[in-house]
Image (cartoon, rainbow, N blue to C red; front, side):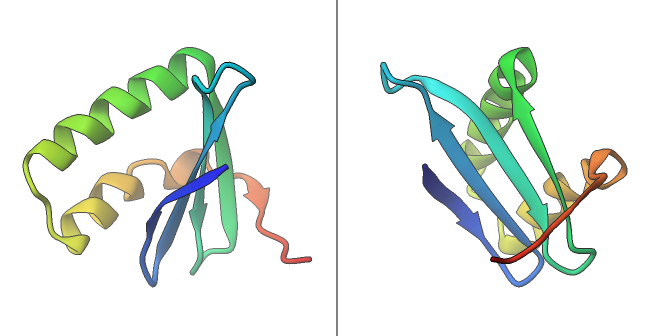
Length: 81
């Protein structure tokens, strides 16, 4: 587990499998208190899109705008333990 992004609005955690390959991503909307887990093909597509975004040297606002497109998919309540 590796936190790859953390802003006042969003947090993204990367999970790896036993072979240290990307296994999935948890994208959390802190303000709405919702999250989604992206695995499989969605995780690979997310990783490629994030790499393209990183290559453009985005601002925090641009990264948050990118993550905002997943808000409609975030149905799982975010619960702190």
